[in-house]
Image (cartoon, rainbow, N blue to C red; front, side):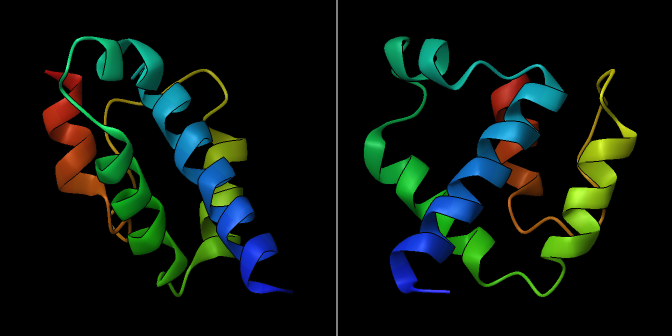
Length: 84
């Protein structure tokens, strides 16, 4: 997997996690609570995760939503702040 493909894959995981948690990333950015650099940092953190397969499985098991990320999520703190 190339670097750009890996980044794109993890960007998708971040977006899916946001959707699962009920966090509208576009709305959050429009309100000024998140900017492009913050989002890039979230994706970069995600690319360092050792559990992307488990993340895919967790997301698939939580299609109806979730209150919090799985314990292994490197962006758990950020998502918790964005949910407020």
